[in-house]
Image (tube, rainbow, N blue to C red; front, top):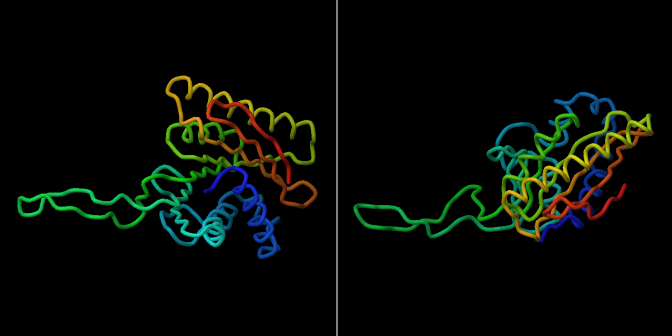
Length: 210
């Protein structure tokens, strides 16, 4: 099962592998579209070609993924497709198993927003759907200014917590649901990550840095 803890563990491994294979990453980092293409795999709906998806697939047996699946940047599933669905054939009811990427549940939903000022929009999308783990990845663009960095990070965590709480008050999510906010930056010419985990009601459970 994928949870916040082993997602972070695998994300750290992916990040290190990514840097080792892309020595010019700092040049690409400041170009949103190029960075997304290299890191996430672009904006085409596909179950192939995502560096993130391919790496996690190697680590978790049976994992499938889909980029741009509906409204979501990337979705992971360890679950089978829907099966034994009924249809009419020559006036009789018959059954079929679904092909393609139609899992009975998303195990992880990932949204990526390069501009942290717009990240709240992706946060809201994550509250609208069911999944055991919902992940938002965004970036802090002022790593050299510690005060702005800290203020921006607090703004993001407070906003995410508030959005989750408001949604959960209107209609309760499964209490086992986890949310994970990952904030990246390039301080000291390194790719750094800060992790913030929330429960289904928006309470901040843990914070850690890479």
